[in-house]
Image (cartoon, one colour):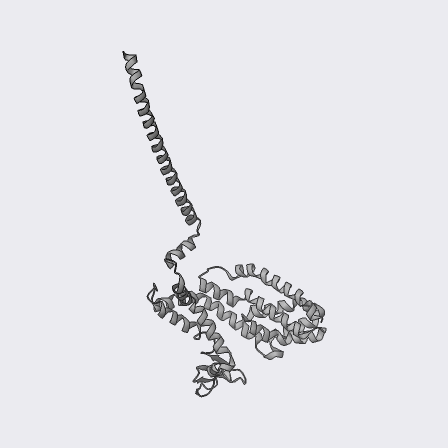
Length: 333
């Protein structure tokens, strides 16, 4: 009887077992899909997190400060506003330097002026264009000093653009205008001493006219001694002028006539020699004390000037060597 009952019930049990098995398989597949989906989400999240972790701290800080990315016109507007300090500075420099515009001569006018006599010390003059002058200093004829306050790159464009930028972004500023000037003043106190000494040395080095200035005497003596070898040191001489003065223009004014005389003496092309002087003078800004001290002040870098010069000098020398090799065919053309 038991065997008959089992035989009779087995087809139904088998069918139920099959249904249960099929249902379990489907549930397992669904669970597997869910697991795979969850796994994919975890992989994507981990990849995103790894991408964020790979970003430098500076990039993450910029992203946090800038907020969500802008697109379209909003992006263009924000770009123009953020770059306006550099753009305005360049535009003001161009506008005040082109003679045809008229601002160049206006900012350098010496008349009308107010004159104050300080006896044997000097005669002080202040013009309507804020040109400061000291004439016949210590009663020495021809010993004069002049400072064009509005033309020299100081109040215009740097101070003017800085104040305008602050007014535009004053709501985002973490410090007031007084705090900003206080920070700048604190940074320039120590470098000001070094700058004063460097500028004094420059003035002594170029004082005396084109024939009697120590810089000119040095160049003439070297050109007489080296003759053809002057070509090797011509570019370095331009760099030396920028090293002392901090200006390509001053270096060219100081050594330009010397380079021209040397070119005549050794019989090479004068224009090519002057071009080599200008190239060397441009490279020399990389080892200029004035520029290095100013850059350290702006960036807040506390490091010896000698360490910076040791790193930049090799690039200056490499630039001068390449420039000399390039100019050789033109020198003997």
